[in-house]
Amino acid sequence: MTDNNNSHPAQCQCRPEGDTILVTVGGDWRLGAVLPAPAGYATVLASQPGARLVIRGDNLGGWDTALIAFLAKLIETGEGGPREFDSTGLPKGAQGLLRLAFAVGERAGARKADTRSGLLVRLGNWGLEAADRMGDGLAFLGSATLAFSRLLKGQARYQKSELMLLIQDTGANAFGIVSLISFLVGMILAFVGAVQLAQFGAGIYVANLVGLAMAREMGPMMTAIIMAGRTGAAFAAQLGTMRVNEEIDALSSMGLDPMEFLVVPRMVALMVMMPLLALYADVLGMLGGMVVGVGMLDLSVFEYVEQTRRSVSLAQINIGLVKAVIFGVLVAVAGCLRGMQCGNSSQAVGLAATSAVVTSIVLIIVTDGLFAVILNVLGL
Image (cartoon, rainbow, N blue to C red):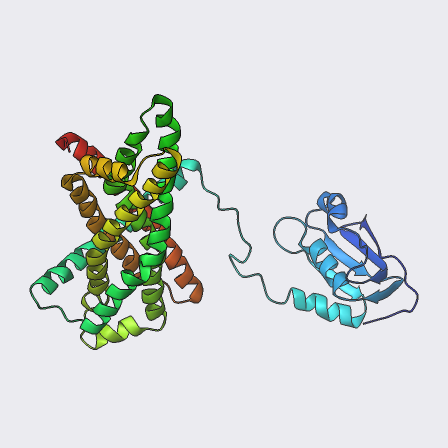
């Protein structure tokens, strides 16, 4: 490539000459320098759409690939593909690079086309994808149900030691975060209720509010949301990593059903521990409410406990425990489903964990709403 010590601005002139267009370039053409824009010559090139370009390098100084890129843009300007060109007026190096740029035709589909579809098309595609995902989820749930039935018959093959570890991880290891969140939720409920009920001299009913809310709704639901973020994401990451490492395929090749060996123990662990965690959350939430009731409303501990005992019946607690079992199944199924659907990369593992949490929380909220409607119809 030619190089001059003295720098001169890059220049280009395009003018028609008969049935050709003469392109004359001069000055220094360097990357990073201020260069003419190819679009500025579109009018001249459009005046003769099929004209052949004759390129000359009069007074051309230093140059690099910036010159080649500029000339390639000029040659491509117009319809019907690149124009014919004569580059004999350029230095030999520039001639070779310019011929090389057009030696192989552009691969079909190399340029990204604007494929943005209309609103109805996008809605239709979204609906089809949602139906496919729902079908995959139902198929996975069916397979998990069959595997669980084999467990009840004593025919499932799994590791009992792993089940014990899962029970410990989903139970005792989760006491800390469940204790903190439940206690604070109970305090918040009591504080909000105390501010309103104290205006009517009915502060004693804060115990009713906190007791019923924790036993029926907040205890099992907050525990389930905590377990979705803590355990559901862990299940998805574990199974997703096994998918990436082809461990799940190895289990299948050994004659072991991944549903029995991996999914069922996680379902059982959450089904067993979720009611216990929910009951524990109920107690911690009521203690949090008692702290606010005793501290803000001047209630005695005996009064608060007695009012809670009268308002919270065994039926209310049982409703919360039933919810907790179902929420545990949903968290386990969502986590294992996203883990089994994981792709073959580390990024896919992260997406699977995120999707597991989102899916679990959505299923928990929707199911709790269905419970509210069903219990209202039954008068419970």
